[in-house]
Amino acid sequence: MNEQTEQNNSTPQQIRTIQNLYSYEDMVLWIEKKGQEIYGNHFKIYESDYPIIYKLIAYFLKDEPTCFQYGINLNKGVLLSGPIGCGKTSIMNIMKYLTPTEHKFFVKPCRDISFEFFQDGYQIIHKYSKGKLYESEPKIICFDDLGTENNLKYYGNECNIMAEILLSRYDIFIAKRISTHITTNLSASEIETHYGKRVRSRMRELFNLIAYDNNTNDKR
Image (cartoon, helix red, strand yellow):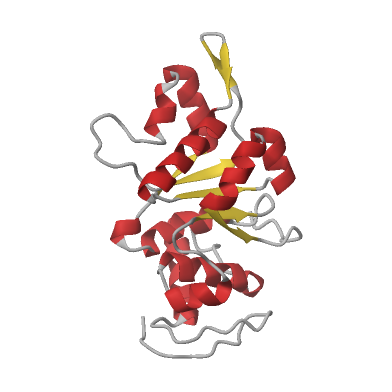
């Protein structure tokens, strides 16, 4: 990464990157190369996605001046929304290699969590909120594809597992400022329908919303 102060006018929306230590064009090339290592040579960052990618780069590199310009709060996590196939999961899997060590996170599919709950019960809520037994601190997690999990029953009791986890993550965020990330194709109203008004309200405090356009092409 080259140290420089630049004005970047390369995105369709003429977003400028100012007074920072990173060449965002070089970072996009690095992301594309990393994506090809993980997903194959077909992986590509499209110019139409630059506004989203630049915001994610700014957030995960903790580039304060650029985040301020974008209205991104570095104390909150990221809620990356967009239509199916726009590349949300792929880009978050790459961003975990970009972020500084103290902000490292892992990506966990919500569907997998629902299956774990079916097998292991309510301890799964603790596992993905406060952490496994004997862990000193909860971890930063990206819950992938929120809305694809099912409400499952454990010994006859139905549980909205992700609603409970998100409420617990909110408590941890307030107490310890440990962030959470999410990818989803749900709209705000759909989130409220699935998880209730309380969860939607908490999510406003937990996340910076970074959203792909609803007309973004399926890249799969």
